[in-house]
Image 1 (cartoon, helix red, strand yellow):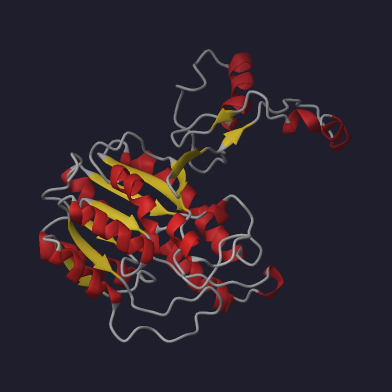
Image 2: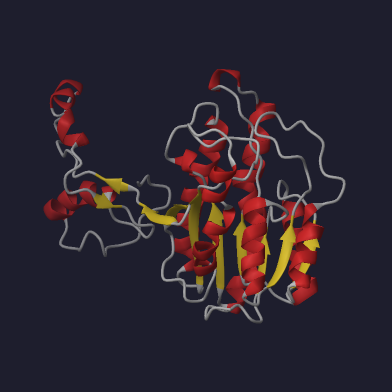
Length: 329
């Protein structure tokens, strides 16, 4: 059964009718969580959203699986693409189980097209689900978590957020936004008992498709099965989660931390385009890189420490709060 338990806690998992979301919902339920299994029940498509959806919403089947295993779950079929849908998902959790402790934002759509061929009709559904959908669901849950002084948010991003994939500009852009939003959540949640993290999963979820250079095969399906993601999702959703504001790449039994970092860079207040070109190697030099943490520091320190040394006796890191209207990295 495992020692990391969720007895008495309530988890909301979006896009949980199939594949990765289903695996997350089953894993949390197996360890005692009451689970809201959300799925819109639409067709799976990597291109234009066409195709027939299933006759029966798969969320109902996942709920049945959980109940047959002795767990507790309810289905929800609202869309994350609107604030009303997100509120309805959280309302389902409260009406069924009385609280919300965990949100796993997994749902979203994909629209694939070369950048030159993207249209608003292709881009908008991606942004409405992959990025705004996290806000729609987590917003009402966040207020409940803040009131109870506890919460865990696990947002699902993608390797396309930090590795360019041809045809996925809208998807990759939205998934990069997920990382930025999560880091903001972590900063604001630090004093509220809420931790938020990101996972970029690598898994095989469509039986008829390949993965990168590898063609479809049963062996590939087994190697990249969704269940390899559940240990990480389970830990990040648990009270013992040791981090917040972090991003992880995971799949096939492998997990690594994905770090946003800054080089030592170039400081020259007299620079011109010509001197910048001359010294460009210093900007790009990756020796002694520093990780940028969600709670500040990094590039801003490099810019402001020389100012403080010349004009102020205050500690530049511990000084007054930055005006939110001012730019920062």
